Image (cartoon, rainbow, N blue to C red; front, side):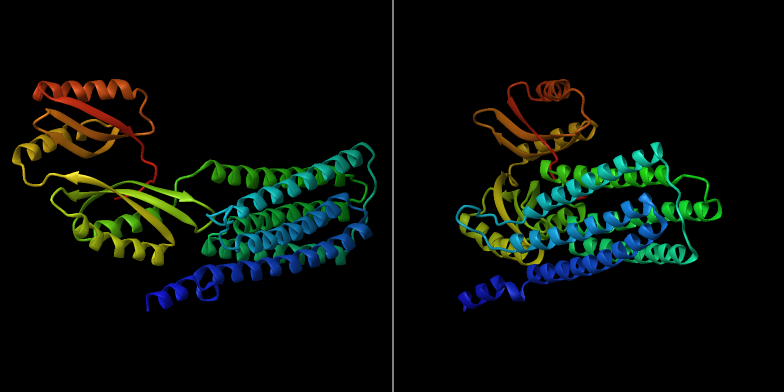
Length: 388
């Protein structure tokens, strides 16, 4: 029975992972066809009008098609299961494919910036017609619709590649709009040679888009905070579990979009047995995995709930901390009365300028109240932003 449930959970075709994979592929294929069609239209317009600005815009569309193809290949690789060499799977391939996309965009922008500068130095006449202007208007509307569609799907599917492609499409619509304005000016005043300047401006937009994609994915690879909504939902599930008195140090290790392995430290009553803890935490582990796709590991903090003297000490320290802005919270509070020992973890605000001074102030206040106790404070960080 248990084996059948596990098989159903891990069956790729019945999983949310497979549905996400399929939707990203479909969206990317739509992007390829639209961009190729727009590229061909702009090549036609640019050739007729002798416009480097329009041709550079057309090649940008072809580079977008290549970007979508890279996304499909990355999804095919990331969809593979874990292997002996890569036990966490291949989800991060999506991030590296975004780097490939950004490099393609940057190279495209740089090449046509060079061509545009050449045309600024040696200007040539352009010859737009009413038909070419109409085709550019159609291209702008199509690109806006594609950008909104792709970006919307990217947010829904949590795909950095689709979000990047959608944003790039919207930027392309602005670029084509600038090209259209230049074409209208050239149509009205053929002797005004601005095509090279507009081509340079278009190229700079393309380069900026490539840099934005690159910086975004590098930030993700360095390590960003997980989404606050996901952190809140996981914290709420944990704190709603019977017997859990607190949840701290939630960390979500990212192995690609929607792929997390997490760990969190839980406060449990010191009198709770290992068997009682297991009965409560194992179903919680399974629920978080099923509902949020996060495999969670639990650490344990022992909390004394019966000794009034320790409870009074805890409340005293908590009141002290509430008055210190540079400390977000303390947890893992532990007291050994026989050894006269007190310890707890201190979560400092990232804006704290001098943790040593804050710790010295807190230690001094505690020592004044409990001079016979040795106090150990372990510095900690708020790794996962949460409203909890």
